[in-house]
Length: 454
Image (tube, rainbow, N blue to C red; front, top):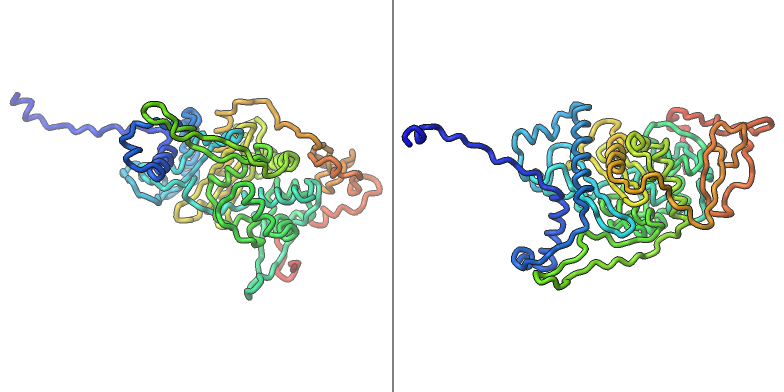
């Protein structure tokens, strides 16, 4: 006894048990407490049946953290998450000092949220970056510009100009000079390539043609709830939106244009099994199947050789989506879907600091999306179903006309029946016109006096 009493006490730290889906469960807790009160939540003995798929949630948490940690190491971040893990930072309530990430997976066939990650560590920050953080969407917002265009008479082979433009701001003594990410210009390109390569100036011209008010209506109609200003810069994602509403809106496109309410709770029963709340999903048509498929076809090109090409390092199945990057590289996005799941990934700092120069959604978020889809895909080898009255044609990627054997690049493109090109390409081969594409051969940004003003 005396010997034992004199022996120094060895304190062993309690092992922190990794919990699954803490941000998901906190969303449910907040909902229940707000609707039914704390007495019901903590003392009633009710049963809550959630929409979470534990295996998808676990895979998503593992992949998100692995990819972001590797990014911190690759670019030698000054403040990696591991630093704050080692010093025991705990419960910063809202903001954290290291690179954050968020992810949500929705079964777009029934509206159920299968996984939700609001940040890299719930104990270090309770702020949910899926539901609470409104951030600029960058080029991911072009989805709605092209949705409005395809639903109002445009097709993938239409030519749009990727050229400099200067706009006067109404009511202000200033001008707006949008630019492309690479500070270069492709000249006349097809709408398919404009989305595939995320050409900002083509999108600006497109939204001016359509009218910003129309694009706002389509964004809200498809599922965006945040207020949007009807200005031309909206095409480049200058609005603040949440990851959940962006992913839900893309899920509407994936679900053949039919919108379903997003749910985290399937049903609630009391301790005796009596149903208190039951989810009832009623689909509401938003855009027709043909427009949905044509937009999907255009978004597939983003994955297959476009700005989201890194997805293909991991995932080979049918996929469509859009990258997003903000001007100062403070927000990176990838929003996309396969045959069953719509998934959104975001990365950035809570205080809007730059991630690093050149940080894009394709570089940071697309690999996370691709690795996760490769892990959870339940329909490998299947393709997006072709609706009635949609046809395909082999198109010259420069002229947007029917490709000939002389065209250097061609692509199979889908159209609403009757809107496909009828004439063969006249830019290539014997007797062809001067190729206008060569006149704008990806030249560097011109001097200010050479800008076209509209």
